[in-house]
Image (cartoon, rainbow, N blue to C red):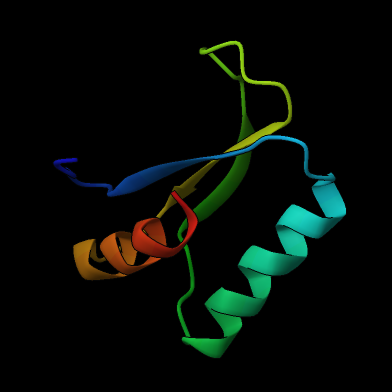
Length: 71
């Protein structure tokens, strides 16, 4: 996936509660001292049941590392 500024990563979390998904991602971000520019719930366009997030990062390398773990 080619990322362009503002380096947005879309994460789909099927069959996961909002609290669990947020906690898992927040722990990773805190542990790696990464602060996203924006963290929002998005509309699922693929018919996925569950939760979809768009997380925007300032730096491409942060977005790539995050995507490798959660995509």
